[in-house]
Each structure stands twice: as C-alpha cells, then as structure tokens.
Length: 335
Image 1: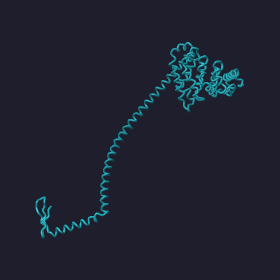
Image 2: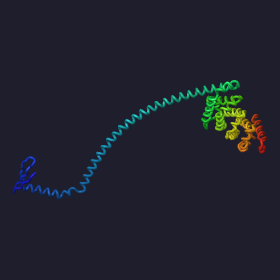
Image 3: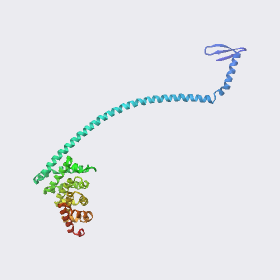
Image 4: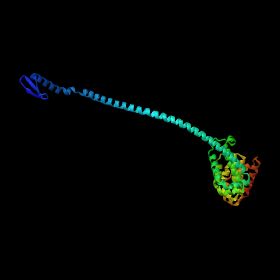
C-alpha cells in the first residue's frame, strides 16, 4: 500500500484494488503516534503475569489433549478387558467341563484298577494254591521268568506306596491289593520250596531276590507281618540251595537286615529271620565270608532274649542259633 503526502489530505493507494482512499493528514499523524505509543508500551503490557497466563493456557490445552488421549486409551483398554473377561469366562466354563470329565475318568480308572486288583488277587490266590504241588511248579518253570519280573515290580510298588499312617489290622484282611501281593509272595515261597523252583530262582531271578531283601528293609515294624514272613520264608527256601545261599549271602545288606528284623515285635518275623541266619552259619564257605561281620552286626542280646520267649518254636530256634554261634571259631565270647 503506497502513501502520498499532501498538505492537508493524504491519499492512500490500495494496491490490491488499484484505487485511492482520502485520509486527513492529521488523522494519519494521530494514527502513527498511536502506533508508536503502542510499540513503546507493548513490552509493559506483555509482563510476566500475562506470559505465565499464556503458558498456563498452553499447558491446559496440552493437558486436555493428553486427557483425551488417555480417555481414548481407557476406552480401548476397557474394550480389551471386556473381551478378556468373555474369554476368561469361556475358559472357566471349559475348565469346569474338563474337570468333570477328569473326575469321570478318574472314577472309571479307579474302578478299573479295583477290578484288575481284585482279579489279580483271585488269580494269584489260585496260583498260590496250585503251586503247592511240585508237579505244577515243574510245569510252570518254562514260563515263569516274565511273571516273576512282574511279581517283583508289583511287590516293590506296593511296599513303596505304604505311608506313615498305614495301619495293618484294617488293611491286611480287607484290601484286594494286599491279598494280591500276599498271594504273589506266597507263590514265590512255594516255588522256592521245590528243588527245581529254588534252582530256577537261584539262577534266573536275582532281581527278584534283591527286591525281596530290599523291601524287607523298607517295611516298618508292625506293618504287614504276614507278608514279611512269606518273604523271609521265600529267602530261606532259596538258601537251602548252596547256589542260592551264596548269592543271598553276597548282599552287603543281609546281616543288617536280619539284625533289624530280629528287633521286630512279631514272633513269626523273628523266627524266620533266625532261620535265615542259621542258613548262613551252617555252610562253611558262606560262613567264612560273613564271619568277620557277625560280631559287629548281630544283636546278641536280642537273640538271648528270644531264647527266653514264650513262643516255643522261636525259643528253640533262638537257642539253636546261639549254640551255632558258640560252635563257630572265635565265637566263645557269645556265652
């Protein structure tokens, strides 16, 4: 915009429209004066308070923008929460269905296990009864190895599953599982009572013999005494064979096992533990092997106590054992 100065009138050309506007010189000077005054006072108007107010206004606007952004994020999170809750509810319902199915499967499995245990108990009881005949045992020998392997695993599983609170009076007579393992142990005992059977066990069933000795050490005093007695009888029957006796006596835990069993409160357990000990004392070659550990391992005071027992067979066997110990070289201190 161009300005032309006249004496009393100013013509201002509007370059955009190519026209002129008449303005009094006095008004133009007044306008110029006011503009100069505004320039002089502008820095006074724009003081710290106003600048602070402007800053606050800008911060407020920025805060409102952030608030709106957070509101949008909240809406998004709320939407995701709703979807997650629906998914969680669906999973909860699915979990309930699966739990019901699991309970049904467990119940079915329990029924099947009880049936198998009852069937096994009945079958092994029949087998136990049949093994009382020597002819039957001889007929079974060719097919016994896999069966005896399963028998050892079953006995081991049963003994290792015993808890601290197991009480024998209720379990011994009512549990199909106990009757099952009892029949298995009885069958092994009958098998070892026959010459061909104990020869088979001495040659081909070392794992089973090791298992019997191991399990006898794991069973607590007063628990399943009848099972203990059958296992001890089986080991004693095997010890009648020289080969079987040599294998059993080679176990480093045999003497500590016998010593522990002699402390049992059950007379039958002590009786058959003494009989197994007698087998060790009657074979010179075996005695030479175990003699160094006899004095330190055997509870002689306990054997003397058993020699005064009211149980006739136990009293006689304990006295015979003491006599055998006395007759052994270097055992005169026993008296």
